[in-house]
Length: 188
Image (cartoon, rainbow, N blue to C red; front, side):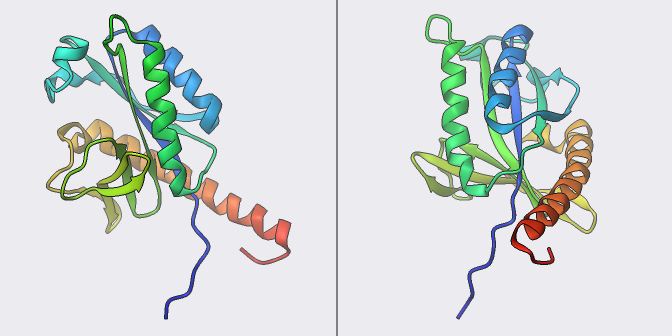
């Protein structure tokens, strides 16, 4: 029989798709109040070159960037983070249309997980209408993608960003374990 083990904390990330850079910055600032300070931010890129999925709702010529936050969380907090992101998105709506799209997820040692409200064969239901989707797997010293990985997550800009973030995560997670070990008088 298996034994329950302590859950390894993860690093929250956020993908921000937008038309209005001011709304995007404000949305990240609001999200940071929940998940802690921004520790890494990617360059913005032309998201429209990868897909037109949001075109009808948000218009053409959308941009996107990624953000990582420095307060480690338990993985099951992803459900609450997705609900928080949707609430923030709603505050920026104009005539019912989003001006910013926020996709929270997390990074840990072996993978990058995104949250979504849409079910599919490779997604796992977490609760409260939210599913988990493993976009990238970390193997043999690099991120590898799946058949379903979004095209922009395969791009060098995204892979370089998540590799940098993983290095920060490894340091933060080690420090988190050390502090926890000291608090409980055990070696971490």
